[in-house]
Each structure stands twice: as C-alpha cells, then as structure tokens.
Image 1: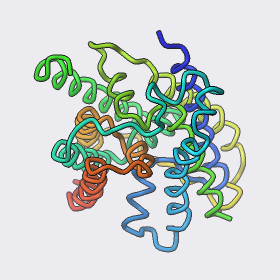
Image 2 (image 1 turned 45 degrees about the horizontal axis):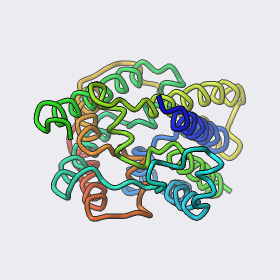
Image 3 (image 1 turned 180 degrees about the vertical axis):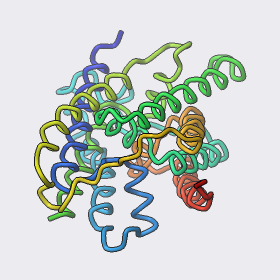
Image 4 (image 1 turned 90 degrees about the horizontal axis):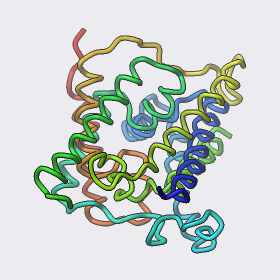
Length: 157
Length: 137
C-alpha cells in the first residue's frame, strides 16, 4: 500500500472537513459544491450570490496555489502531489464521454440534492439518513460503472 | 465579510482536493475500481473530511448562530424518495464514467481541457434539466 498518498489523502481530507466546519461556523451553510454552484448560477435566493461566487473562486485557486508552490510542496508532503507531480490530472476520456458524464452528474446531483461534498462530507457528519442512503447509492453506482467499463467492456483499461 | 469567509472556505476545500490528489480523475477512478489495482486514497480523504467535520459541527452547532448569519441552515428532511435515490444513482454512473464529481471538476478549471469544459457545460445543463423535472407531492 502507498502510505504517502494515503497520508496526503488524510491531510487533504482534514482540510476539506475544516472547510465544511468553517462555512457552517461563519455563514451557517452546508459546504455542498453542487448546491452552492446551482444556487450561484440560478441566482436563488436573490442577494445571496456573493459568498457562493467567492467560494467557487477559492475552490479554483486552491490547486493554483499548490501549482505555484510547485515541487517544493511535493517534497514536504512526501511523494509529490501525484505521481506525475501535477496537481490537476488529465480527464479520463474525450469530449463525448465527458458530455454524457457531465449530464448524468448534473441531473443526478440536481435530483438527489447533493454530491460527494453535500451528502458525503457534510451529510454523513450530521448523521443524516438521507445523506447516508445517497452516499451508499452513488458509491455503489460508480463502483459498478467502473467495473462494467474496465472489466466487462474495456478489458482492463 | 461574508464574501471573505466564503473565499476562505473555498480555498481550504480546493487545497484539500489538490493535496489529496482528488483533482486527478485517475486517482478517483483507481478508488472506484475495487476489482482492479485498488487505490484507497479516496477512502482516507472522505474519512478524514467526515471525522473532522463531525467534530467541527459538534463544536460549532452548540452556538446559537453562525458568526456572520442569523441561523444555521440545515436540511430537515429525513425521508427517502425516488428522486434522492434515483438521482444519486445517475450521479454515480456519471462519476464512474469520468472520475469527476462536481468539486474536483470545478476545482480543476485552472487546468482546463476541452473534455473538462464539455463536462462542466453538460453538468450545468443537467442542473437546469433537474430543476425542470417536477417533484411529486
């Protein structure tokens, strides 16, 4: 097992947990990415868009800060940000696959009222039965999808 | 002040995703591939985040109100319905196809590629579509 990536995962996870706690402590809001961005785009509720916009800008600037810190961070954190030393990895497929996947993620998180952050990080921490059901469902569906794509269709891509 | 608090929360989230390697779809797909060369990283990310936030919420929700707001806005529904389960299943399929859930997809904008742009545009279209599907009752 690759302990350095596990430790980096744990460190990153703690930061994500702190982010969620911070947003609740300061603004009283759930740190659900899909919910924050949906409400930002649709401008509802009115007059409450500014913090959603700055949250999104912060989210985007996180990886940029890591890239500016460059290789130094890789040495400090141990093992590099990822194997290739790049913070942002390449997409796993082409435009058509991503259009299909994006539509499914959008419709799915819209109907299901949340994604990995809202249901996973925040909902599980609140011991919400809806979030537990949602998290188990999307994890199972994602694992099954990867199984079908890699081991039934793809032959180990 | 609200906007600054929002920025700090987003920055912490983006740093966390970047440090943990979740802005690399290959890492995420490696976790979801239970029957291949399994990569447990995402388990540590989600576990670390949930435990930290569990403790954090316990401390924060003892207060009467957030620092810069009037109330804590928490979901109150407890029931399970087809919208929640069906929606989560569709989301899982899209996540499994791409390795992107909404957080890492938007956090990766600095490394924008054509496939990622397509993913983001389709995701936004999907959100509008979901709003157009009426909920029963």
